[in-house]
Image 1 (cartoon, rainbow, N blue to C red):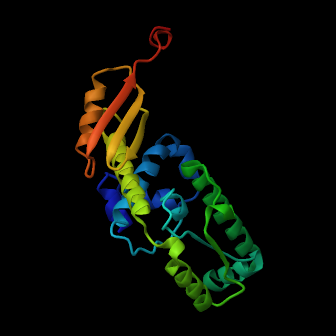
Image 2: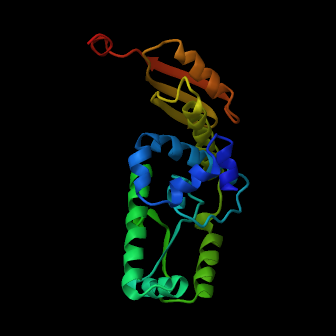
Amino acid sequence: MLVEASQRYGIPEAKFMEILETVPHWWERWQESLRLYRIVLQAAMCEVAQGGNLVYHGHAGQELFPGISHVLKIHLTAPLSFRVQQVRSRQGLDESAAREYIEQVDKARSRRLQAIFGADWRDPSRYDLVLNVAQMTLETAAHLVVEAVRRQDYQPTAESEQAFQDLTISARVQAALIISPRTRNLTVNVRVERGEVYASGILAQSDLEQEIARLIGSTPGVKKVMTDFESPPIEYMYP
């Protein structure tokens, strides 16, 4: 579903999987495109999450819905010795190879999340619940998750639902701007409040403001568009 949603924004499945799953050499070749993929990934995830009742099991999920209080973010962890046993069992590796494999996976994941979101996936403060799966059965872990998500703390409220809709609109707007050839290289600040979009920044070409307003206005969910762009200082235009 996430791949299908990402294709709406022109990201093919092969590239999408490369973003999330491949080894670190990807960064050297695509460093300049990280902003594109982060924005499109978040927009695609917001589309998938419409309607709620969603369980997303995968990398980067904890970073995709910032500020939404009814989203329960969970991190599964275990001691290295436990992880080594799991890898040896699943992949038939010896202990040394299994440890090296885990080290490489963790290093790649750390670089990927840091580059895209500026975050450390091993920071427990980025999650609501951290479960050590070496200390409990999977049934116990599942029970704890279900009980937590049923608590009042994680029930949607009018405010949290509105925050999610505003996040969705913001993601859609930024995706529309970054996939458009005329605006993809611009830095546009986007703020959304109850469906009203405020766009600001610095533009060297004043006619681009109309194009930005048009793209934002045609984005689903946008009720009103307000822009506030400035021209760059003259010393930057004439070195």
